[in-house]
Length: 253
Image 1 (cartoon, one colour):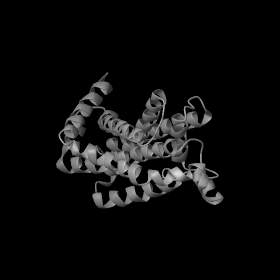
Image 2 (cartoon, rainbow, N blue to C red):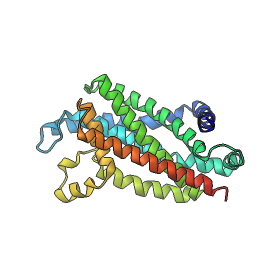
Image 3 (cartoon, rainbow, N blue to C red):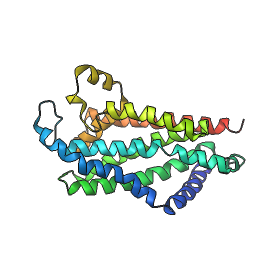
Image 4 (cartoon, rainbow, N blue to C red):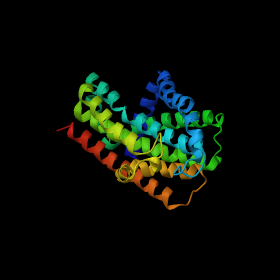
């Protein structure tokens, strides 16, 4: 029970800090809403083009925006742990008997809660543009986005605490995020890309997660595509949790 109580303690502290600055939640959801407003209508004429995935423009574009929200919402949290390390918060936590995994998992849970709130806001806004999705499918899609965001949070905290420098962490985030964004079909489906680019994107696990969320929004719950995306998200979380625990353990040596 120590792990769960420690995780809850870290989570509640992190959640209180977020509630004191609600503007960050608003800023986090503003970018995908701008994409929804300014880029989404451009896809509507492409919905009938050869190679366009099944479904209308919104059931293709909105899941991509949700995945983008999960990626960027989790990728940048490492800046916060660098600030906490510099202010001495991490050192005080490490001298406590708290579980090292709980120290990072509590923070990740806070990030997931914020991400879920942002995803719900984005879906509600998309309804006004013409998105039509079953409630159950939307809930499953949000759960998968939460898993993806948790994986990125784990990796981001691990990298931030390992580097301890915003100057080194920022280029790393940009270097990793850009290929993921371009090769996962978030903005434009990879089925519209040249063959060589499609083959390159096939090795990108995030493309399959995007496809899984799109399948859910089409109401295809029990398909191989959804199962593959879920499996990849769980694998990423396991790897991220292991990396986070390892980095926290190394700080005490």
